[in-house]
Amino acid sequence: MLTVPEAARKVGRDPETVRRWIRSGRLRSQKVGTQHLIDEEDLAAVAQVRATERPKWLRTTHSGRPMPDSVGLIRELRATR
Image 1 (cartoon, helix red, strand yellow):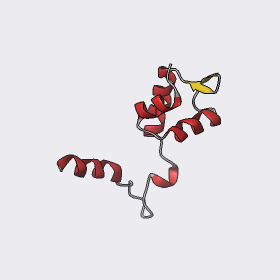
Image 2: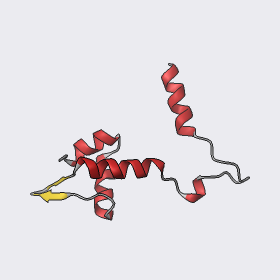
Image 3: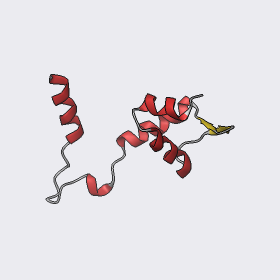
Image 4: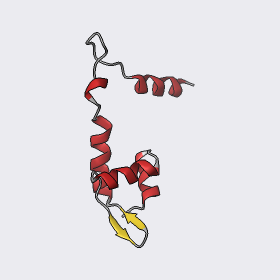
């Protein structure tokens, strides 16, 4: 079981993003006192879906071509430095 900050570090997201996933019902958690505890398997499932999910309007450009992977390009550039 992970706390919200631990879960956020594990998936490389902001803790508030993890809290939003919990509030929206996308991520199950157990509340113990004031802390939400998250099962690692539930977190992995949500993180996997969120990583591949892209809104429809971001899948193609205005001309209908597939949207370039700008995040991947930035990661490549950073890796070469």
